[in-house]
Image (cartoon, rainbow, N blue to C red; front, top):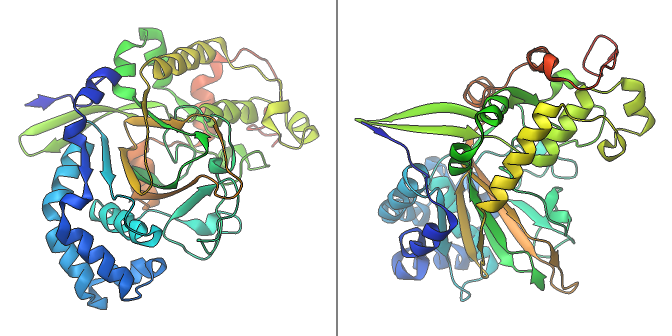
Length: 383
């Protein structure tokens, strides 16, 4: 039997809110265990060591046993139904207790997939990524990323420009909201794909280079850039049921900047110090039309979600796009969100599942779609 999940639109998702929103206070045993972990002085920064069975941490072992029913429901929703889940931890627990909830629930779904050693100023191996405009005193270090910007980002999935990393589930903990704005939005990429023109579908199933999320706008050799399709059809067998999806891998600026870096003469890129905003290389007509249609349909299908303090937003990162609206901060208490990536970090397995190719291969595949005729592309012999 074949099943095609994730076919909701914004209206019917909000109508079913009771099916995908959980109140953690309805699970008193789990709330009690979180408080005990914090009160006993366990450090959530050491989560990876504490969750190891060799640590013999009684409270964590009891959480794993007691949370099985909840984790099973969340998994089913993320992989077989909505792809979106909210877990409300409530304002009566501390920020550190909420972090425990994020780590315990997130890692109940799979492996904590992070590699902060690739990120400047983030080598302390902290299990959560912080996203805040200003440094937050509750965290040991501050992470780089789009969270430092107040402007709108654009609907996307995480990790689309990463080599060797497959982020299956994205977990975001909202510790402090912005003074104004900053609401989260989600969009169903599967419904969007269904409604794309045939021409755009074919284009977006080709491979395209991506700007690196770790070193954006600097001189990474184009052959080192991730190069993958925006949509890739896959099936997942689950007993007698076969799930069909079009895996979504997209970030609006990463794809456009990746094209610029691989279709512009090296001398021109160096002249503007690798700033993609100053590179005037146009996208091919085919790619430009496909991305324009994709962005419009994502926007048309976006559902805005208002999250409160200590709310967890969990997304199937392979099918649900997300972003947040522009916001204004309170300088005394800036917006603060911390995220966890759940997925695979085996390079060969992840690249196979995502469909990553050598960048030169995808350049060859898309060569006929180029609108410019530069003779020394940055991804060619002149690099």
